[in-house]
Image (cartoon, rainbow, N blue to C red; front, side, top):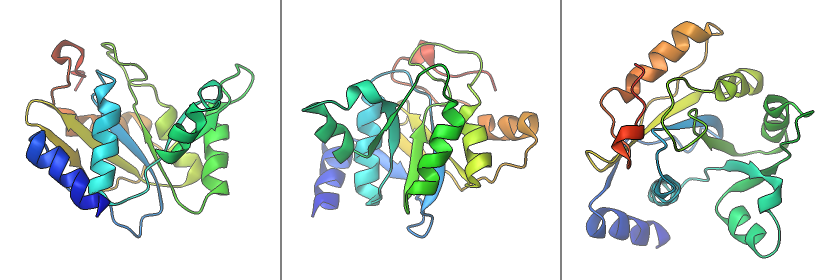
Amino acid sequence: MKQIIYKFIFCKIFGWKVVGNISQELKKCVIIAVPHTSWWDFFLGIFSRGILNLEINYVAKKELFVFPFNYFFTWTGGSSLNRQKNENKVDSISKIFNEKEVFRLAISPEGTRKKVTEWKTGFYYIALKANVPIIPVAFDYGKKEVVYHEPFYPTGDIDSDLKFLKAYYKGVIGKVPEYSFTDI
């Protein structure tokens, strides 16, 4: 029933559509969502995961997981992350993959909602360390589509792999068009 409600609101009322899918059998992966130009992107993720009827997770700083907000963040798939400088984030997140039976981590390689010319590479090293595929997802406000692409297994050749992954986002427009990722 929830899936029908999500689809009605997202597709019929807002005029968006979800293209592609993630197999229910794929229990662990890193989902890269690009471009990330607005806090509205969070809601695109929430609606699209509801339509796909999948558990999709994210990490946020542990300071957000305090009463009463901790219930909301946990309910929407959040896991708290200690962002102290002396703790390696890749190792911390890889540890979460090892602790959970299902963990599909959604992350923005841009690392911010502002304009960037390079992606942060943590997502790549998390996927390598956790031995999981990367799923490219495009939030295309120009076409009003959330596009889920096929899983990509990183090879260890980061330069070649990033070039391949970035190609999925050519021409994709974010909510704030001038912040869209264009280094392709």
